[in-house]
Image: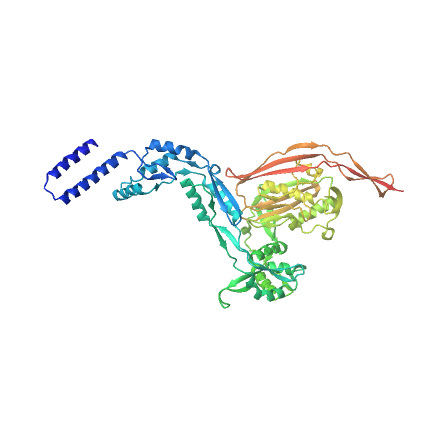
Length: 598
């Protein structure tokens, strides 16, 4: 600086000796004075932050980097809470910096402050330096935080604040008169504005209470809009609509009919913004799914020849399938609904079968399960065999779920089942279909070995001796219509075939699962049995249905306990899924009837 000053003085002396007018000397004086000030400014702030620079309300101008770091140390180490207020709902929501793992970076902030006015662009830097002499030059506080946690918190706040607008709609009151439910105005947070607000608070260390950026959303359909359609809806809601298929009929009540009706603004012949009644495709699609479960019939197949290694040599279709014709039935339903017809018939089409049986992908055995029913009475054997026959042959499409209840149909005396022992309401009693759980148990074991995911499985209430004759405790599955079912999913890209095999001479039942092998491997652990408890003391109940002196056992003792085993299905050393099967069995007492009749 001294050398520069000496050079300036030397130049000044030469200029003063020159013959210049007064105004020229004044101009030279001003220029040299500016140069002197400019040089002095840069010399003084060479290692300091330029004037005016600040972070939030913390002034950093004129400080060295070390001094600035010390000043920022305390505010940057604090934990802050940003309060967001929803004035309309009188609610507040907090965002705590510690919950976002937010940390301020003092070194990066000071570096940004020091670089203010030092971009290398003379004009830009000069403008910044001059502005800093007049007004504050704010610098953002550098920070790092977990963006996932912030987005999660903002989503939580949106979930609490957002209220979608609700269109006016028709409904039936208790007297089944058509009424109009009023529309409701909605509220929604402006997500982009909220995110910017939060970031600005972080960058400026500004944590005073702020108003949530909420916008109002009007409903598309107002109550006043529906008045002109009310008469049409009253006609529509007068009668039930019956859906028929073969021997079946299902009633759709007026209340249910309104669920399949929506009001939409139309464009075109009716004019922009005019209203009309439409089929509510969202609710109707759900109805179609339920209806398809009732009317669809999956094709059935049969493997007639295979190698000892399980390679399928011959496969045939033994029963064609049919499925709901969605397009045709939808049109028929719309016509019946809006023309107030009393009935509409279900339209079905044959399942897409072809002469090329390779399309099903039934190429090899995927898994097999067996069970031993030795000691079963004739009625029980009849029932489990009948259920296996009806469960057999089903071809499960890719991505679909197999339901044993759906495959076997209704289980009752009317459908061919005999009376045998079943578990009902905490007791073992005689009932139609006793023994069908042997079928579900056997299929469960086949699915386990095939590596297909189990969707629904229920253990028995107590340990049943039949299922422990050839397997450890816990490898059983019960069904009880309509509440309990056994289901599995075909997660392969081809069909899978469920095929039963009866071996009466060995008192055994088996299920084979066929399909296209994809290299998956199955590992099943041995069950861990805990909490074993003995059976309670026998119960003796008197009855006048038996002669005096006659005793008959109607329930059989079984110890209680918990069985847990797991299954891991992997492919190419990568785990596809893991499942844990826990069965809690109650201790079961023996029950005897004691005759009292003379």
